[in-house]
Length: 128
Length: 395
Image (cartoon, rainbow over all chains, first blue to last red; front, side, top):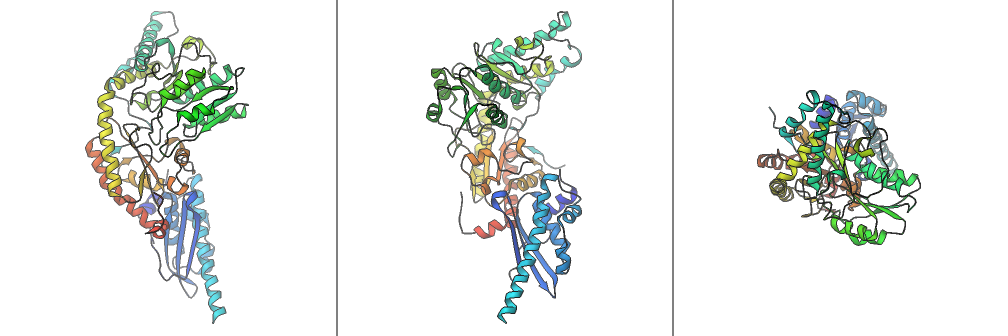
């Protein structure tokens, strides 16, 4: 039911892990629904220099996290914000219809992490 | 070539060679319509009669109490709807359990829409139904009690004889979905006070697409499939000749080998269960420790999700299931695991391994060898694992 690309990103996920001193962290989903995605961003001069993820979920959720992190690595924040769930699914050569929500979660997790980064930046400005 | 291990026998089994050998002539050589008067038809009729005798013998029933169907789902639908429609003047109340197969649950939900009332009994943390609760749920409108013989997901075996006795004393029909039980554990419709029983051939090394409903003599129920006069006017449609022959041979074999096979499977199952529980942390066994099907093992692994576990096992050549095959593709955790009280997040991380006659001790070794690493790999990817290290535990 999954494309070879999904299986590749599931079995050999890219960018798994955590960034301890991350500049932005986003977590979406909940355990009750069976999916949680957590994205960690390292940002320099508005550019994503490192990204890691941790995911609790099905094969499609893990593959979507892996692909989404690949797609935003090295991109500017504005470019990363333009990433859509459709782009994630397409890059994986498609997802089964009932698994499309996994790509939505990936998009949301990235947006949440960037939002967290911006909130921290604002706090820094207020404090300084 | 990669090792392949099939541990999903509760989903379906292969057809045994002896069964297939008996079936094959009934496609090309002996192909008459059992309803035909001529010799071709009579030959076919003889084969159907023999299969009916074999099925009856396996259940301690009479041949005229066996009705062939297209499988377990049809048998469940027929038993429940057939009794409901034929007895609605007597009452509109049905008692069943919250852990039934969807063939029973969805049928009951349909009847609720049609004005029937259904009580879905809870189960304990092992998945056991209490006969006392059945007794308490009975009203003067109760016409049917339907409780599965053994659960397809967690393998728990229900107190069927006791529930049947309660139903018999109160004059209420008792149906049991015995799809997972027949051919695996002893089933005796007389001794166990069963009025209606569903079975399916492909769960005991017979072919898919054929099953049977046992209907005790005297039980009032409407036909489900209308048409010709087959199955003594109760189930229309030209008989699935080869399938019925296969069912008959498979059930005969299964019952003859039952003691030896179930002893062998239970020993392998117990080694699998203790191996998993001893080598992996934060795991629980679902279902009853002893009152369980000989081939069933069902676990919940904390912090990981079942499908990713299945995919990982599949990459190692191991065929397993999480919950029921019929629900894969649905995003909700299994209703059975929720009914035994598991929190959603634990229910999501469940794995069912069901053993069969083709499994060997080496297969168990192989699973025990690869499973810990798979669980570890997925846990290392899981944000729940990090959060829960040394923290709250569910199991």
